[in-house]
Length: 450
Image (cartoon, rainbow, N blue to C red; front, side, top):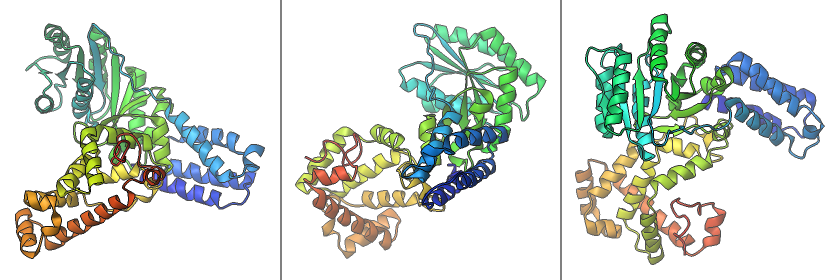
């Protein structure tokens, strides 16, 4: 995400770092290029103007000019101002303990409200709550059916009524939720291709009758300033408590994410970064600022690893590394856990120093599927001891997996190289620490090297 602005800013900062000493003039030249990069990223022009003004006030001064690494100082200032621009982290949902929490999703048609409703319900379910989804969008064809399908996939109940009005559906849904002990009710409301009086009248009526505790505006980040303008209008006419940005994984510019808080005054609560129902994440401005500047996002990386890596399996792997009994079954287990963290390119982009090198890099996710197919086509003995795989065994494996001899040979070569690497670091905890591999929950992390 945000590849274009990341590349533009990296180019600007490379020039600044190349200066032995910075002057007022070349700082201003650099910030002029930052301004152009932000405008090209479709950031609101008023937001850009104020942003550059704030950065300039901090950057042009004796403290920066006389510092040891002035280029880095400017980067730090831009980083800090980006965080301020996107606001403080505000991802909490104020649940009403012992009572129902009503959450209303609003936005234009095509923004991804219905899918977001399912994702939000799944997130809330994981917090120990009992959500109910409400199909209050009677305008879009198949909206009710889509929500029912999502509910079935998530095993979350969906309330709907045929040939009824949105306000009546919502009021009856609240009663239904009380009767069935659903403590969080999520209303998927109607949208339009454009804001109109009919839509706003309907949403205002729902808000007035139900008095929802939270209203979230759902918008497609890829529409840039159109999303920001819609957010501003919705906030003026209806009012909302936070923003959920969808399709952030496909947004190469970042204009909406960088503008919406400054324009509406409301925080970005969550972001959708994929089609799968577990691809809704909390929005953290400090982490996003680091990613925009190509610094990676190591905190999110570690959090994803902690969620994906099974500690018991990690400890088993540790013992096998020590005993030199690592097999392809273990390789497969690690591969599956890495896949749980998300698309490989996205995961690599979180690692500091790599994020700004990802543009144009083509990562073949299907290669992981081929590796898995090859391993599953082997016998238990072959997985435990790949050295016994001769020519005839290779042929049987490639026939069973539907792959090529190159795929099989590449896997065996990679596995052998990995085992050599394990032997090299086995027992050398200091080396692993220097490599930064002892983060809690990561592969080869704490407790895995003894």
